[in-house]
Image (cartoon, rainbow over all chains, first blue to last red; front, side):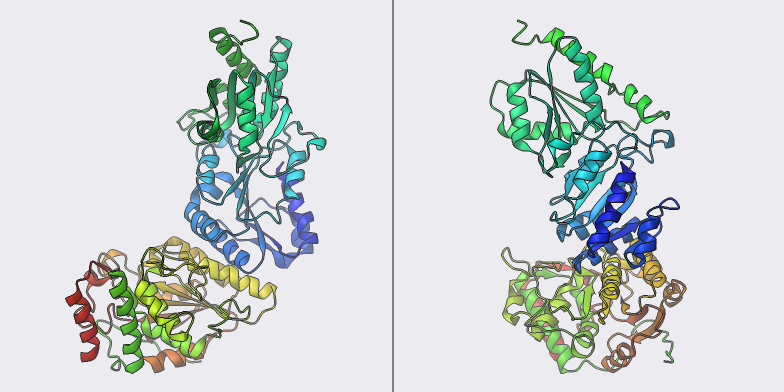
Length: 315
Length: 283
């Protein structure tokens, strides 16, 4: 996904002279083609995230569209005030590409995890927050970015994530995609959790339970209508996120439902990471398992809720 | 040019304030009076810096604040905005009467300056340590667009405690941004007290020099000194420039000078406002 994202920046920059790239201190070889062909628009600015964001703001004020890339935890937390003031207050078209959203950097420990990034980014007025599900969706999304107004935070997965997006669905920022039609059990999810939601839905289907799956690739602005529509059809609604349940997708969905969903409400569960610093290492997958976010666990959670709350059809 | 080192301790031996410097200070008090509050000490130390910038250095068009070829000037110490507002009003970016609306609900003149609201303001500042990075980006943009303009950032001495300032300084130097000048309003008093005690900046000129800037020190209330120094920019065609302006917090108001309690004042009674105007008459 990262490769697809950065390749898109390169392709876009070839066509659009407003686009510049700013990295912090990325791995050797990053965007070598960009650097070789458009050296004046390629910046590698060192481990200085505050300056990187301020500098991007200055470039954007003068008509450029900076794409900034570094590790998600540092891109969101380290320079938060610059994001709020330099980018959001000034409403500037800077694109923030965060490597390793969620638990990708599990073996590197809690300093490198980005599990509250969605919460803190969506708290900023004017910030758009997008977490594509896979490399193909990333490509579809990236072509929409140059002319999108205001700042955008782009959450990257690890790479090599299974492609579950479908070309025919297209991509519109702020428009959720129903990968499985709304049903009495609904899974609302984002980013690389989409593939796990689909696998869980397949497993539940085999057990005779239809699951709707809504890919909310844009967490902000949230597709309010799609979320409400999904909730109206559902008796059981789960939000699934590789993120703390404090302030992320689940919270955004609840806020929307609270503002617009008529009674009766479905049973709602938010699956994600509890309010902790994960204390283990391992891998993204093993950590997801620890937090009950792998497909069999998601299916099991649905079964458990069903055992307590039978669907209308079954009762 | 040969830059004369200036070692300043305690009160400066600046020439008396001339009529224009006192007029601009009166405009600051007009705004203070209207808003009933303001960073008076921090603004009074800045007057000659912004005066000389706007009178003698910067290219701009008050009737066309977004004129693309204007020089960019960012007041990074946004709390000194009263000084900037006074000069912008004096130059005709907006009417002087607007100063009276300072901090009022519907005013465009807030307690910190905002881009898009105040004609002539390039960046919304107030959170400290942001302006220099933004100017680095603007200067890089000018280079890419082959525009021959200059970029000025006015920083506070307390402000440069922020690490982001030094990140930006490294970046400006790396890119050899000779179109960029950082001016430090070195009044030696931050909010709590003397910079020497809260967070000592010395050796300040050496710090900027070691970060790759060409540095000059000036008496920040000596208009001739400021004119000749700022008129000699850039000091080095391969480097960004830094001007350390030795100033007096509260300059021009004897009872407020060098007094940290005058950094910011609110709920100023009428008699105190009258005393501020009177102090300028006596100066």
